[in-house]
Length: 442
Image 1 (tube, rainbow, N blue to C red):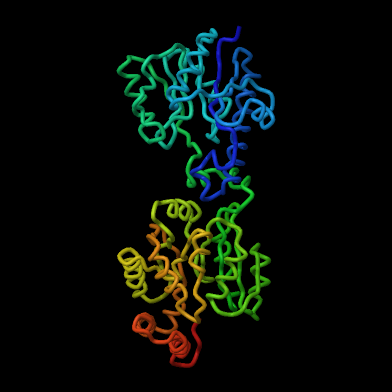
Image 2: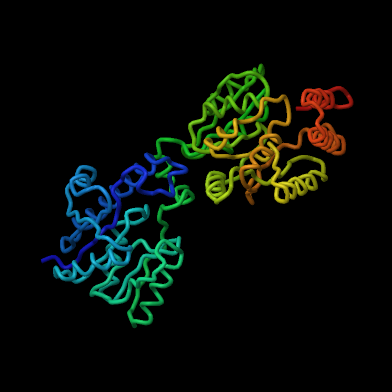
């Protein structure tokens, strides 16, 4: 007779019915595929432990699907459907059944903790030899493992706030009131929310569809583009360079650096829209060729856009250059972005691809396409500003002059709002892109 049992709680990986909070980034099929992968991995770890520890039994309690479907998906095992009721009732029944069958130590684990390992399972059973309760706390406030060596009445009360950050804390409080000795395992992370995926590089590699596509419009940007691409390269991120007819080797450089290169008609709005049409990610970052994304930008984009009511976002602005006044420019740009939700294109605007398509993309105008897009998006919801900052080149400010550049920018905004025809504004901007000595400024 075996003395120990591991019970895994999981869901059958049916599209649209599991990992629903991940659907915005992975899609229904992708979320189900991730559920399948994580379940298979956890089953493998539990079976690995039972091979090492022959005194341990393994049971899978599933929700959705059927025993046959579970067996087809994950192979031979002892499957039991979860009963009705909240999570506490379901876990209590599974534990009670195990103790009635004669097991002396019983643990319940989830299927969505990528860091769980056979060593942790072994440590948990060792702790149970000296303590009444063992808990593996999760970073989100729940737990990925709970084990005991006898039934504990009241450990899962009806008012337990399952699915919140209070679960582990309340369980520990209940254990204290019941005079139970508790041992804690290392704190690990579950994968329930979009930002949780970012913690695990292997999971990103397994996801077939890239979560983010980065679109960079270019026109003779060979001298600045490579650092921008390198700062954007991370696991399973798609980089698209939408080139408007460069003659300086920009396309060749981008392709060699690993970006997908497309040729399209000249014009930043046209190029950005063309890049978006080729994007396969759930989210798109529109990035200027002279702008470097911050570390951790993937998580920042996903967590920002996951907030209710947020339709788009951008990063704070940091301008690199020789002029001390650029710090003042950055300050007021960030203040404008917070107070009025009006980030500009050099702040790397990001948005869900579906949302971008619903507003029709960037307007087909020769200039101020980023400003016009943001004004349109503001009607639909919040434009969020990330606390992280992009680093954009101050080349134009350095060469053209701080005051001159500031006046040109303000004149463009004022002209746009008083109804000056956009073609006239474009001619004005092109005329004043020239340095007083005659050199054009990008």
